[in-house]
Amino acid sequence: MTTDNTTPPRTMTWVGGTDGYLRLIDQTKLPVEFVELECRTVEEVWQAIKQLSVRGAPAIGVAAAYGTVIGLQSAVNATPEEFDARRREVTEYLASSRPTAVNLFWALNRLNRLAETLADLTPAQQLERLLEEAREIEEEDREMCAAIGRHGADLLADGTGVLTHCNAGGLATAGDGTALSVIFAAAAQGKTLQVYADETRPLLQGARLTTWELQQRGVPATLICDSMAGWAMKEGRISAVITGADRIAANGDAANKIGTYSVALLAKAHGIPFYVAAPSSTFDLELATGADIPIEQRAPEEVTHGFGKQTAPDGIGVYNPAFDVTPAELIEAIVTERGLIRPVTAEQVAATLAAGASA
Ligand SMILES: CSC[C@H]1O[C@H](OP(=O)(O)O)[C@H](O)[C@@H]1O
Image (cartoon, rainbow, N blue to C red; front, top):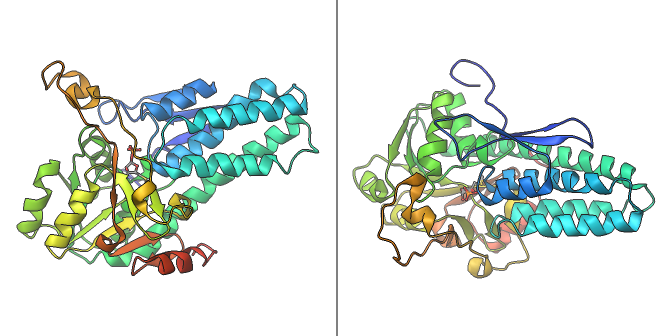
């Protein structure tokens, strides 16, 4: 619930039936404007993911699932062969939107695997079933967020100063978030927390989105520049760090927003536990380690012209990786909907994910 006891706005909502559309909060406009986009073509969904109107690994997966349904609407009266060809075209197109968050590929693969079992149905019947699966993916994510909160809340003691990086809140998921779900759950236990939110350059998800969510929920929050995290730790303001993740390898190495690795090193240097919160849909067990996690490189203008103001000379070279990888040995525990992965080892990852039933 928000401070005025209302339910927080949903990151996205499917409107209608198989001929419906996806309505989503345009996160590039927050926190100054609350604007919702109506995506009625797969190109609009692709663009919304690419430009971070919808962002955050789980939210990207849910949006891509609904985007697949939208992309198939034009083929609902085609032959089964044409419908299948269109599905492969649409899912490959959506997969090209962003490379790092594995939830995107996990959702698309889930729909494709389901479709392969529906060959006896007409395209219209298949589309009904694919929409049902997209709705299921959304609902499961909501439930995983809640379970992550339950499993992680006890990690944060009353009076904790918690640092978080980027936004791993409700806006990044279909539910209450991952890292923020742990914070919301701990606050709901009556604990007093002081959250320090890294602004998270260059796109400022922390400054724009995490602070907005925490204010909505009445959780005390302080905004800091990314460069202030180490000093805040040195001053004793921080006693725990928790972030989200976009792709976690089989050994527990975790890709997350650029700057997370630096924060994890700072936490280690100050003896502060560094936690990652993520659902099982964020794990990529085909990767033994984080060495091969694809890191998205984004446009130089995000650094030199952030939100319309030029802050660097024309022609300067820019390096703008959107993610980095934190090695498992820097992570105290990974909070999943199936419990804590601690210690963070390949064996513990496998054991926890095999636990199956969400708590
Ligand atoms: C709950 S996943 C959130 C995760 O996604 C963010 O990346 P982006 O804003 O580029 O989609 C960031 O890495 C967050 O930790």
